[in-house]
Amino acid sequence: MVLTAFVIGLISASSLPMGAITAAFWRPSDRVTAMLMAFGGGALLAALTIDLVASSVEEGHFYALAFGAVLGGLLFISLNQMVNDYGGFLRKASTTIYHLRRKQHQQIRQIVSRIHQVRLFHDLPTADFKAIAPSVRSISYRKGEAVYRKGDPPDCFYIIDQGRIELFDPTAPDRRVELLERYGVFGWHACLTAAPNAFNAIAAADTTVWSIPRHAIETLLLNSPHFQQEVHLLLRSGTLTGYLETHHGMSGDAAEAWSDRAARELIQRGVLPAAIELERKSQPAMQAYPFLKRLPPFLQDLPLEAQEILCRKLIHKHYDQGDTCYHQHTRSDRAFIVEQGAVNLIDPATPLRKTLVLGENDCFGFYSMLTGAGHTATAVASRDSWVWELRRSDFLALVKSAPLIAQRFRAFLQQGEAARYLESRHLNGEQAARWSREAIRNIDNGTAPPLAAEIALEVRSNHAAPLAIWLGITLDGIPESLVIGSSLINSNISLSLIAGLFLSNYPEALSSSNGMREQGFKFHRILLMWSSLMLLTGIGAALGNIFFINAPPAIFALVEGIAAGAMLTMIAETMLPEAYFKGGSVVGMSTLSGFLVAIFFKTLETV
Image 1 (spheres, helix red, strand yellow):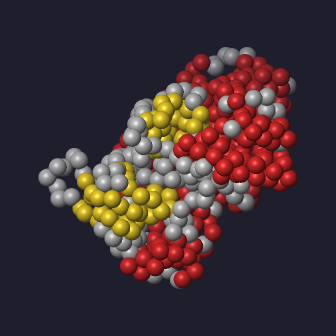
Image 2 (cartoon, one colour; image 1 turned 30 degrees about the vertical axis):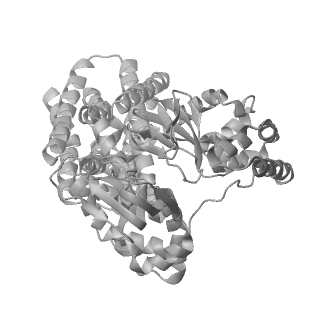
């Protein structure tokens, strides 16, 4: 009987390596993957209902079964969370989504508790905090990376979570303005005055900040009387007028005039006018557009209307001789077009390499900006230069507002040029292909393409992921192996249970294998993981058969309940959410089909 349990355990889990082998030569679409996952989930639900729950209820052991089910569900949740925290969440899209959502909720709670450090938010009602929290993002910067630069639009203000931020004015003799530590706040003067940022904000160490977008502040101004009052007091205190005079060179009369107008519009309309308009020089950019060199193909030869939309997003800036536009390996958040002057692209790692000199109408940094990858060289102004900058956030807004540019950008991604760029300089082939697929899907969904730098960082930061993923997969398979062995003690194993387990294992292995390949896992490692789990399922079935011999019926019902609870929780937390995430409405009928197929196998037992 022990040997029989071992063999049946192997058979039920043999679809795991089959799924891994299939993933080596077939990458199904998200819709097909969703159908398979939902089908397997439906089959497993039928097997749980008929072969585990129904039999124990018929024998009068409902309470033991229910207690075991609750225990099994809690056990799965706690172990699953533990495994995910060490990188196991990467095994499935659904576990990744859940893990990131849980981290986001933790971050929002931290924001609500720490934002009181900002005087502007003292005694703000809880409802107003909750209105801000969903807009908050956590962003990590490596040492030397810029949060924003002088002259940038005031999109957000920031609270330091970990690390240090240095504020400095590149045009002032005494360049450093301030060094901020944890919970320091910066960028809020610019947000309230709607004036361009007056400083460069550079990470003085590896730093994580919370960004609170300006539109969240504008929403508070419209809807929160308390916040309006705090801002009104701030306007009358002279803090903002002093900022405009000191760092933007406004005269005292002009600053006071703006403050008076801002106070009136705040009371009347709940808005604050811009103190200083951003310099863009769109018309000269339009005149230079036909002569631009090194511009990505999808932005070349645009119709006149699209050219105007593009040029209105550019920011006009000046760089003194010797100023650095960006450093090598720092994350790219903007591209550049030289209007006048010269910029040198230098690779410090190879001093003998010839420096690339860029002049009038040359474009640079576009591929790094489009993909969100790190810069491959350092860009330095070799003489006084005027440039236009296209920030990544402005480009993504352009994609949303200009259908023609969005269509051409999507076609550019489909052609694979961006993926080839990433593969040649930043990511391996699987990671570059993953970025390209996610970028296309995000464009279709109206969201921002992923950052290639974050994909590379995600893989490096989850160095324990292979073991955690294997533990997570094992966690999914332990309950089924125990129930196979214990079920053989009192009766022959149910054909519908074996069919349900087999049918649910295949799409789970196929989906997870494709996910692991996108994380850079080699095929032999993936196949070894699933094969070892198949062997462990057989061993678990044999041990289950040994341990529960002569066990009282109530204990047997308890064990079946633990298995059923853990498996049902696994279906609800991983299989069906992933299926719906990838396939949407196709999940309902696919789940029903799997459910009916498993019941069909049950009818074969009575023939």
